[in-house]
Length: 108
Image (tube, rainbow, N blue to C red; front, side, top):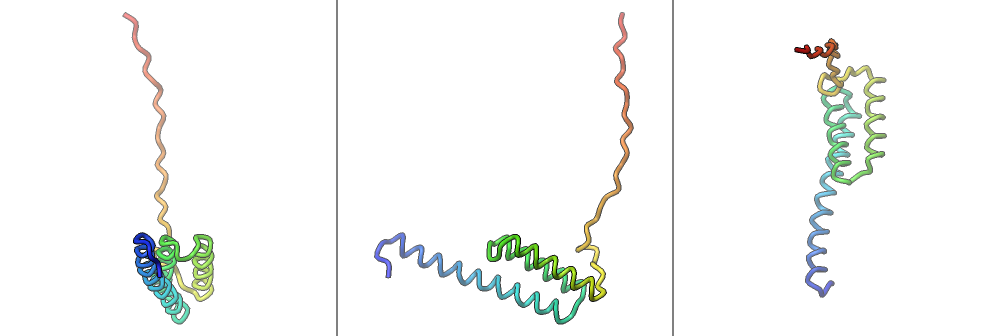
C-alpha cells in the first residue's frame, strides 16, 4: 500500500478510471453483440457510436476503432442493410460562384 499522499490519490484515481473504462468496454461489446444478432440501421448506428466513444476515451486504439467500424459496415452491406440518413454522409451540392471583374477606377 502506498505511503505518500500523492501515491494514495493515484490509487483512487486509477480505480475510478478502471471502473469507467470497464463500463465503456462493456457497452461497446454489448452494442456489437446486438448489431451482429440483428442487422438493422439503428443497431449499426449504435455500434458505430459506441466504437467512436471508446476510441475517444482511449479505451481502444483509433485504428482498431476504424477497423471495427469498417467491418460492421461491410457486414451490414452484406446483410442488405441500407444505412440510415444519419449514418450516411450528406454532401451539399456545390454552388457555382460567378467571378466578377474588378471595376477600374475612373480618372478625373
